[in-house]
Image (cartoon, rainbow, N blue to C red; front, top):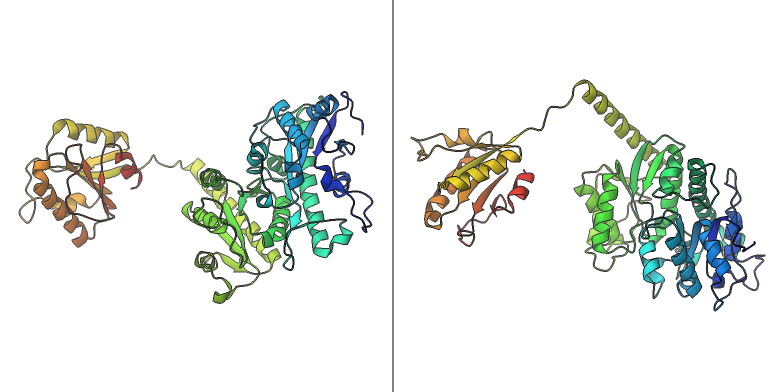
Length: 501
């Protein structure tokens, strides 16, 4: 293909030439990369793309001005990630120049498509630009690890026909996913700016979202990362759901993130989804550096905490002796697990999403007819033993500002048989707060607090928590109470106490 500065290309293929060599003894007419690039322009309904793939540049060659211009004038960059790519100086220059010259987020550029030829964790000395990119953008994993293989294999190598039935199926499935993602992005750019050339770019458009635009969205599913042995099944589920209008998250995967990055991105993805789907095998999965548990367990626990509907799948139920890891064995002892064929499981996912969507639409229609009332105020009992007026007024004003009503007792009100019926006072309250602002009244505070707690227990009152509000002068005092329902709070922790009700 021409390399002149006037030539514009839809896709610049950035690869290491060592990954494109033809092996001796094979019937391969072209190298693996050349074959992949050609196949991206085949198949029913494909978008005819102008691809640039340089077969002449070799390791050690100069990164010429012509090549700089070609990268700059290409609409998309297809990065074929391998150890050879990482060790190639000019590959890194192609990536850096493309990101600099395209108006996208450097950490997640919309128009960079990353393909893994081998598992990322097997790479050594990964530079920072690829490390950042790998955390958020993986559009296809062309490697797979058969049960009888000692190391991951590149699907379709040296040719799809010579790689074996499983490898061939994996190759064509991943090729289909990658081609669809690239074609969808290019069609979106062409549709948004029909009068512009292919070098015109837009920003912040997700390839996944654009792929879904032609079909009405049924719902959004977080399809959890799987262990290596289930990558083909996950890809098959994704391929079955997307044509039905299901948006699949994450757009890449979570492997390579730090624990802090994972917590943020996983929580963000969960908030966008209606359903969490997890595929399981007896393989435990990797535990990333600094993580407290393997990724399958962390994702499941996160979905539980988010109170998201869950569906899990396994091909068959394992025996207790099949899984040594207790945490992983726990994933098979849930009400969400289905041991069935994958096609039936896919149908159940779609059925569940239809129900969720119908319920949401019904609730939305009902809300339009009968708008929901304003938020219900929380009633909190406040016992101010110290009688510090300024503190009392400040505390009550804050609670009212947090949409809480306050209930208390008159000054010097007697408690017990001949006094106020404290059970009736506490009955409608969500929580209680004892103000402990005078260390000299520690015994009085203690006795009143025990009286209130006993009334709650004896009368089965529904109070969720009790807070002991301390000040700088009393925060070090010990009242001798240890309970998950009785906690010490101060001005800083008051907001968390109220939010927890």
